Length: 383
Image (cartoon, rainbow, N blue to C red; front, side, top):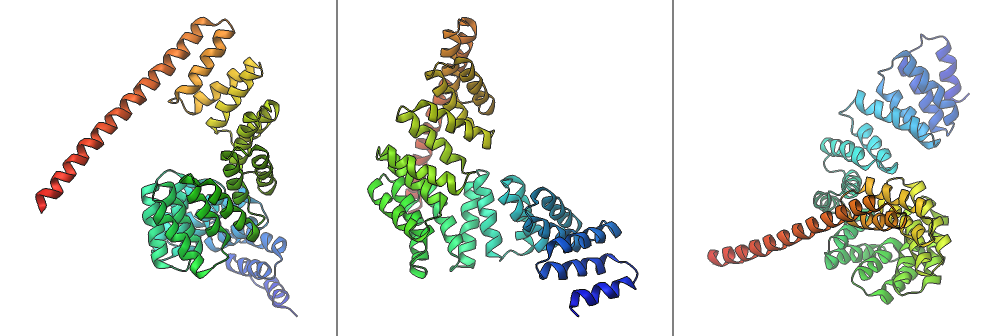
């Protein structure tokens, strides 16, 4: 008789308890029988709604069964019931990050890191969450600590290197990728990331070679297909770019950047209907994608669909009200439609935002020059 049968038979003669139901569910889960485990976790919580282990185990089982919304609720409950548990906070934060809720994830992962400050994987995921929310300075520090704690963690080094490259520190970033390749010569991500660094520096041919080498190792990498598509587009190889970007979408239908870039590529090739279709897919999959709305409005204006173009541009303005381009484009459309007052307002608002941004950039430049002079003088005074 199996352990589960013994336990379930024994449970019939025992007083129901949250711990017992959770234990039975856990055994079912270990045996891969999650559909049998889930009811026991639920019964455990019915007996005691504050029994954190059952909430945690239920969340894990639901997540593995692709019931993401319910899983997040259970994982969040476990983390709130026992906020000092590293496992609960870490798993909840990881799930939030995977679901694209980086701001919420950063809070949970920060709490988990405070509980276990030397957990490199927690720090790596915290770095990713911080990076996605635009907190790049702190993300760099967190990635550096993760690499220091786990020098052999290729994922941490790759994440750190990519952010270094994006921050303009190309050489330091490449050093991270090379450190990965020293340990794992066939690490496709590191090979491709060197291509990313080369692409950022304008060495397009060398970047293409790196991406192609990486794809020989990881042919199913949507990110690598996307990067190769971007590189080919920059070489004006539009047919090659379209092919790679379409493959990236097939591999990862939620890679909205691939839809956007494919739309731009179709637009450059004069295939406006296909460009519109890709932009529509981009905003359908990511409704807050302001750049895609702006581009959709631009292409629809060219095809003569002025009402739809105006609607798309208004969405772009709603999402990024401090970007001047959509105002100017919408002003052109309103003028063509005979709405001269509305057109004038759009032109004026676009001009106002543009002038303010130019003034801010000039002030920033003047301040950086002044601060630079002061810093040099200060260093000299200390000699």
